Length: 570
Image (cartoon, rainbow, N blue to C red):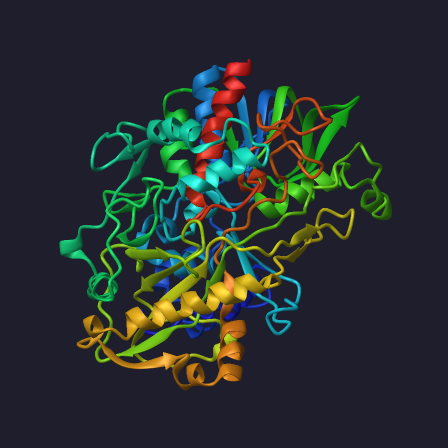
């Protein structure tokens, strides 16, 4: 891949084809023009209306199940697989997207294409007031595995302080000492068991071999160390500071999404587990203060299914608050404005949205074509502090072996690579807001990027870190020129303009149904929704605050612990 992918153009092509607006030949030409790099067979496969395994087109619905899990993403697939095995009860999983049986998902190097495929729904933020009123594309994984099927497979627990913060915020029992045993239990670390790592669990976690590392990744590590930053040998020890070779959810050369690690093994072992894809849930059914089932779309028809015990909402930080709202759970005044009768008033539903800010801008032209990756394009990360007084690292930088920038920066490169950066402990808070009682209407998504002044300070510090590593002598045989920000970095006004244009999502929304005990909490530390019996939330939306690292591992943890809690309660 020698050119950057225009996700907006590719998503438009896929959408138009799905709506019958073009033939296959036109679709293929537009996909190629967007820079997706699809092989012909892949594009035809995606465009051909193939009936996926376990599709609701061929699977009959069931009338009831002991547990209903809404969403088969990072947390949902984990929870469903574990719960079915631990409890012996019947579990029905309803997933609105497709099955995960596709080379776009299994091949670790093809995640940029997966992000712009039918396995991803690309929402759009509201105009971001502190980022030049830009509308930012907001992709979310749809299908078995959810975002674990389309992300770049980084497995990062975060900092130990993240979980101490959760406990301090009312999430009792979610401190670092409490969650560490579950992390060790769920993982199969290639380095074997230790005080900090687990072996023999369902999720294979691996590390790239530095001897096989991409030339740009090796240069990143050498460049960071040459600037005086000490290497972190294991960034899953609770301490993140410094450059590190990442941990992957990759095994035997293939992506380990949560469907592969948790869901399919449970089905193969004969658990009472039914999985329906292309079955989006429209509403929760609540009777006399108890959630008794759900209403979902099946083969074009509305279908109801009852839960004998509990419903677990694992639809993610965008759809979970939407379904709660549509079901009468949320701010009472807002519900009435939508014409929805309040069932329970929880003003925190949809609030507290947090996302890491991805600085998608620092790019370099290379002296020669960038060689293909043996892993996932992104083998090395680095965390550091934006200012010395930060209690833990709050920014990061990472090498990516393909050009990567927001469309507003108008990146032009024949051969190149990026050193991206991020604000990992943002102070800004946004919201997911439902604007219609019609479930077909997407909610408004406002991450409120850079609203807090410290976030702009951190973004600038992260960008400077990325530039310093990229311009180090370690890249002298690779680097031809710095393309972005380039000369703009020398002028304060132009540099601020660049920073605001580089703002993008890190694909890590959390917090919209926060766990805790305060007035804005939606669930208690056992993940039970306040005021409604038989209903829990188990996904990234329950995080009181965002973790310092990529949020996939904590989401898996939430699903895993949720399954243990529910099985124990039964």
